[in-house]
Structures are given as C-alpha cells and as structure tokens.
Length: 437
Image 1: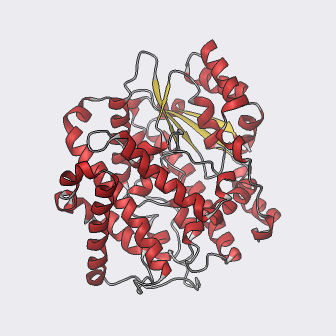
Image 2 (image 1 turned 180 degrees about the vertical axis):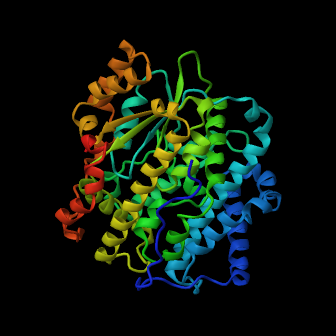
C-alpha cells in the first residue's frame, strides 16, 4: 500500500492571507500558557479531580512536544503576533479546549492500558465520504439498528470515564456546542449538534490537532494546509482505536452487536485510516458514499463558511472567491488521494475489496430503507424486524436536522462555474464510480 499521498498540496505563493509562523523559541511561551490554561479549564469543569489534572502537562510532556502535534498547533498561530488581537485570542481559546481534552484522553489511555490491550476490534462498520456527502444521515440510519453501537459527541471530546464524571464530560461538549451556535445561529441548519447525538470522528481528531474544517475555511492557515498532506497523523488514528476501545469498555457489545463509526476519515488522511483502522483482522465493513462533486462543493463551501463563525475576526474569512478556489483545489486532492490509496490497499490484498460497499448519496437520501437493506445484504448482516421498525421511526420522528431545517447552499457566496467544475471531474464521472454519482 502507498505510504504517502500521491497528490500533494502546492503551497500557494499568491495567497494574500499567508502569514509567517511564530519562531519556535517564542512559540514555546505560548505552548506553555496553553498547557496552563488547559489544566485550569479541566479543574474548573470538575474541581474534585483538580489534584489529578494539575500534573497532566508534566506527565505527558513528550506527547505535547511530539512534532506533528506541536507543529500543527504552531501553524494555527501563523501571523498571531499580537496577544491582544481577537485573532490570537480566538485561536488561543480553541487550542486550550482541544489540549484539555487531549491531556484527559492521554491520562485515560494510560490508566486503561491493561484493559485496552485485551479488547479486540471486530466487525466495525465505518461510514466514510467526502465532507457534506450524506454521512450524517447514513450514520443515523445505520445506528438505528439495536445491534449498532455508536459513539456520542461528548465521548469524542471526552472518551473514557476514569478521570471525569459523565456530567463533566457532557459539560465540555455542551460548552463547545454553545460556542459554535452562539457565534453563528444558522449553523444548526447545517449540522445540528447535540452532545448526546451519535457523531463523527472529526471532533476527536480535532482534539489531536487534525482539523479539516480549518484547512478549508481559514485562508490564513497556508502552512498547515500544505503540511497536512505530508504530516504523519498515525498518532491520531492510533488514538481513535483506543477511543473505540474505551467506548466498548463503557458500553460492552453483546452477541451480534457491532460498533458503527462515522467518518473516521473525510478523505483528508486516507493512509492511516486504511493502515490502522481497516486492518484485515478487524474485518472492517466500510460504507463508502459517493456524491456528485459539484453539488457536494455547493454544500461544503457553505458549511465551511458557517463553521468559521466563532473565528470571524480571522484574515480572509469573507473572501468568498479565495475560499471557493481553495476548497475546490483541496477537494480534488482529497478525492484523488483516497481513491488512489484505496486501489493500492486492495492491490496489496485483493480480498480486501469485499470490505467496501459503495453507495450513492442520491439513493441513500431518496431510498434510505432499500439502500440500508442493500448494505446489510452486502455485508451479510441480518436486517431484523426490530431494526426495520426503529429505522422507520427515526426517519419519521428522530432526525435531529428536522428540528432546525436544512440550510440551502448560499449561492451568493459560490463563485465557481458549475460546468467548469463538472468538466474537471470527468475522470471521476468516467471511472468505475461514476454510476454512483
């Protein structure tokens, strides 16, 4: 299998928002302050565990100084030379919460080590797709199965239960959700967030400084964008495996049960996904959603623009043409890399082809029950009467997005020519996957 993305991001020398990185020696002070504030944040969330939290930064100094993690953090602060600026303060607050969650996870993993080593991953179901390709809807459909175990949003921020109460874990997730919604009251109509809802791995990946939304939505992060294509994010995916195991310890599976994960990759880092999460011995069941890339871009660009609401003081945040061009370029790379890595993974062992069930976004949205049955038939899973009833009930009454509606693409902020974009994807439409578009 390939060990590096074949298509790399070319540094945009014409990006007017690119700013220099803070020198390493000067950033050290910021990095230390983030640690101090992260520990203080945990102590405020759950004062009864303060003694445990106060030693975390020192205990996990090696992990916090691990180059892929720390350098990602430094790149977030590109151009943030004024500590009094809103841009600096917004990024600092973001990094504090992420590091607090990461430190807590590291402690949980250390405390759980013996138990984690004994847990086996068997028959996981992974729903993967490009951003804004129906993975949320598909996830809600599949986890309606009484045998499907899903990871809730609060778990992604705070996996494991040894170092914090459920109340505290929920409080952290609620704080993040409130922050997002307060800064953009329309975000609910794009992605309805709830700490108790089954959610995607994005939130856990962000805790470890892999942030695809920032790559697409923040023009200033040119260095981070470029390096994300070559950076070794194996540690993130090794973390996801341990997060899964922590979930299985807290919510043990029975008989026919299986864990169902949403978007352990949004095609940004396909190599560690296949290498670490889709090992042959796991018998992975990968539901791969394909969507017309033009329609997907309309939705994705709208989502990126709205997701940056709490970073509204950042550079270029309202330069819609730049963001359009940036996302178009990125998404071509994501898709080409992932399909090429997929082919190399299967070529290494042709038996792996059976691990992937390709579906169409369109058919999943229009015929969710029939498409779900098709997925279950492909993987040889029983489609039970209980699941059928639960799925129908979810479709009728349980879709979180129904409460807030679905935001249409903001066409006034879309600057690309759809026909030109469609033509640039001829290679995809004319491939073996074209029938799913």
